[in-house]
Image (cartoon, rainbow, N blue to C red; front, side, top):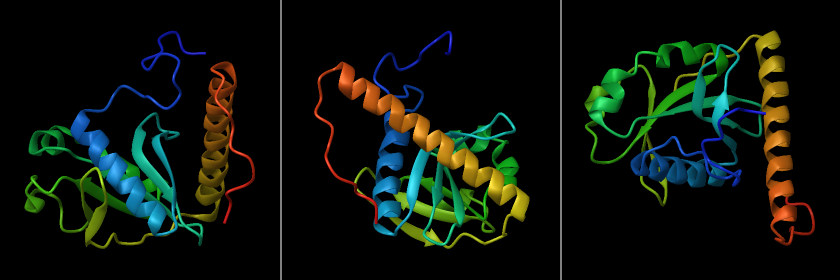
Length: 169
């Protein structure tokens, strides 16, 4: 159990993101879900970094999305190249008000707001090794299950009704 809980009790509130970053996150999750991806925000990587969004599509392809809500946000971040080792595809997501030309042309780019997103530039694909894919798949599954457990316990503790049935595809 962490010593400091940034978000308090609610497991759906992280507390680290700006309002603009949360708007991008929301639009990206809606878009990715519509495209058949499952998404985990704030995904801890084995190198100690944290991915803003990681997705898994129906074919088992991992896409890592790095959210950049301003020019300054992009310029001060030098860690994003380290993320390539943890995904098949990498892309940035930003607001329409951020100039698109600041992002490397070699990386994918999404333009998002709080309602949806559009792909501006397709992410390149560089397939993970089988061992890394297995490790990422297990990590993805365990983190998703742990988050589901926290949400379920929070709902039970606070008297929320849990939905019946299974919403799997």
